[in-house]
Length: 217
Ligand code: AMP
Image (tube, rainbow, N blue to C red):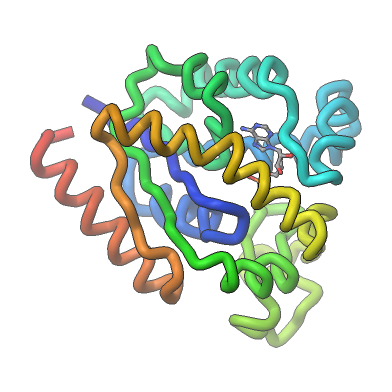
């Protein structure tokens, strides 16, 4: 049995940061629908043009477009040993659309909403390698460039206070039901995401180590 992980949590809960750490340590390919959409927008593709207006408003891209993109991505060779879905599924329609995949672990990042504002408003992302930084919470010597690859850092168009509020509302209304959906199926593991990067990852590492031992995945 291979690891088929979904990581869930509101904007700023640490999905991207934790996904990078998990993918460094477990046999899973990190698939971020947000990163995929941003790459399409950067390359000005038809899909990118379609997604752009939704993303800049903080709204969800329509399910049919998103599901098709993810299914296509998962059929590629680099996902065959396991994957980690970050930012998908975000609605019940999307969860139903991939029910045959047999998702076996859902990491649910739980966090007090008050902590999210600083995490989002001061977030910066590398244009090239997609590394994530926070210039207030973990100050950088050089706020313009990525410490990993030297790429240019930028602020996402949806990382403003106003857009965060829209994204949190969409999380409560459309995505929280997905957590409940997986909870009924017994695959949800709750994590306290309000701690430091190191301490949040420690919890996830313990969960995944235990699952791999128990199920000899
Ligand atoms: P993220 O990088 O995961 O915060 O995603 C950024 C934005 O991309 C979201 O606010 C949505 O507009 C869009 N997006 C990402 N994943 C999905 C999804 N599964 N369904 C619909 N829209 C998505």
